[in-house]
Image 1 (cartoon, rainbow, N blue to C red):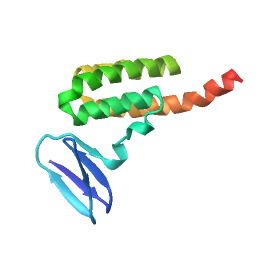
Image 2 (cartoon, rainbow, N blue to C red):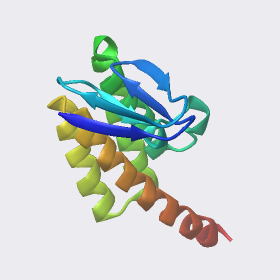
Image 3 (tube, helix red, strand yellow):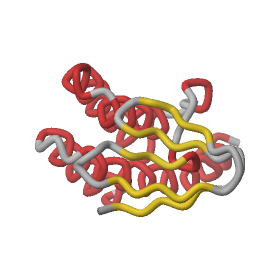
Length: 133
């Protein structure tokens, strides 16, 4: 059983349905469901880097099981692009684990790996910019 407390105006996605709280709301999800809180929802216009595109693809696969294979394949491709852009051993390990989680359809765990990959990518971007100067 999952308990979710939402603030006024906060969003949550449950099995693909976007819900917005009106006032403070406490929800109890009593069965297996794909649940994403508002802070974990990425809009397509935010997917501006390979790691962010991998996150978006994993998120879409997680909330839309009917299209999970296509989105999962996209997530794997974007993870490979992120590794190519970052190039560190840590990124390689994260990408390998991300690909495994996607293959196993453990997409919520894949989202966590994408967040770690985004942090690595954010740290690497200033280094790339400095190296090109």
